[in-house]
Image (cartoon, rainbow, N blue to C red; front, side, top):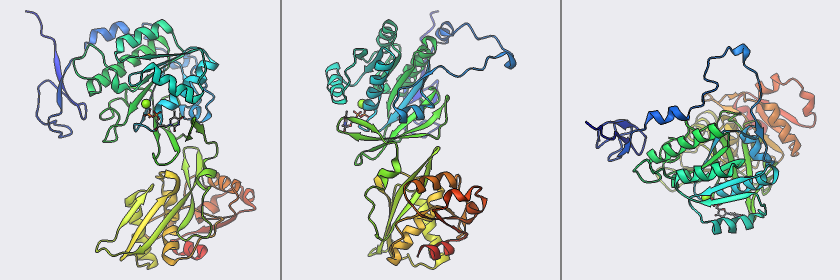
Length: 456
Ligand code: TYD
Ligand code: MG
């Protein structure tokens, strides 16, 4: 008897597989999300495997060598990649539609085609003419950049094999499909299959491959995170559409640190690197305004100074409003409770708004004391000295706890002309070369109370 083609049912929301159809996914409880897909044939994979290197080796005999890398000379991008593009690696760049992913990769391809040779840009979203328009805007004049408008994976791989480019970019993995699966492009099955095949292709040919992925409504790439574990590196391109700043963040990187960020500014003719983000985030800071304070947030190895603003106003609502942009809501609620209980500040009948200027999002406990200072400053209507930076983590008992890498942050602040810093006493005590900060007045504090005294 002829065996039937095996199919499985895959939840389009979380990727759970089942041999039978179910109305509700047992894992993510989503209704009506199971879609029939062809079961992957395992015999294909065997023939694609590389034969060499499959013998077990003694670790002592393994030659230690760095990965084969090349740089794009876009410093912010190279750093996030861990020092350049690794041969045979697959990098996923995720982000909201319209944030600038296509612009970024086109600028990268421009560099590569000028520095190294052929680069190949496959778009499933735009026609060659549209790509050309964008390229003109970005000043891409190279002879070595090839483009293709195509959505079928097999054709893309065929074209890439013929061209042998230094880098292959597939713009939006959600638009590409393989004819081996019956489901529509963009479904979890297709996205996973296409990414898997591109991964095998990259490893076999050594061709670095970049995949662009739109973040879907729930914040996951292509449905939920189905790609993150397949690829080598995951970068997110983030930013507020109303602001020109874009941050490229490594979420996973097999060839480098995941702590790095790259900062760009979207301009008329493409993305420009921002070498010193602090300067820009502080550029329009009002002097002597209440509720404004400068905090330091460590992004990877890089400290960024940002302005944090708070506004405390009398509320007309039974449930006073708490609005936070760029900082965690729960964190702010907690800190307001500390202010209320430990300092005796009556915020009960007050609306409190907290905002990080420039569309930056800070997710670090070291800004706790900054939030407290900003709220207190607005509440008391007393401005904080414009040359003061505030940092420190705050505990529920109102104690100020030490933060990581205080010296790095201080150096950055000193460079930008700040002369005073309120920081955890513990950090001041532990500091080895205090004379580096001769021109900086370091005010170590142990509690929120003490910090208030120093600030106002
Ligand atoms: P795009 O790269 O198409 O975003 P994505 O690929 O992530 O969907 O960028 C789209 C936005 O960037 C669009 O709103 C216009 C803006 N933009 C500029 O401001 N300057 C430029 O030089 C370019 C090419 C785009
Ligand atoms: Mg795009």
